[in-house]
Image (cartoon, rainbow, N blue to C red):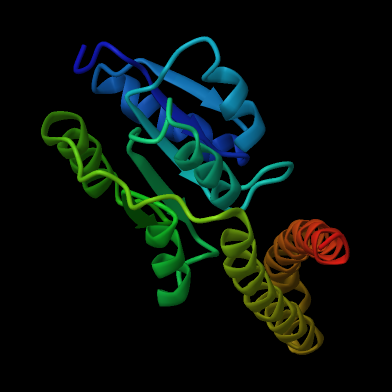
Length: 208
């Protein structure tokens, strides 16, 4: 084994979760799995991980919110967290991730060699202490901006896919329809999270 404590992988897409688990276990790591941020927090009640590898866009609790909870809890504040994402890859997304305490950021599709080197480096060499945790309102305001920007991008992707579908020959349509549906699913998750944030901020403004 490369580490006594397990690695926690948080990912809602089953085939990606399985790929990460197999890749890490092949290198001798013990792996815990979770499908969203809330499952990750529940799993950590039983066993503290040496490292957390997490997607960002997930239902119930996404990676940004998971990281905020980890960094505001003294018992989990220093656990290294590696973000994986195919959606939140703009410079502003990465900057926000680092501001709230991400240790590393890897874009999907995952380069296996880069991924394993990052894991090995963090486990053997450690990482710098995370920045002081943001106050809740400061986190939520920054988080809302990222959600709003991502929602605009998803709407543009869906509109572009629908325009293309009208011009494609029948044999090419299924692939584009799959991509469009994934964008629609992503948009629904982002929209739901954005509504929760707006509702929370609205309640807090009205109570002050």
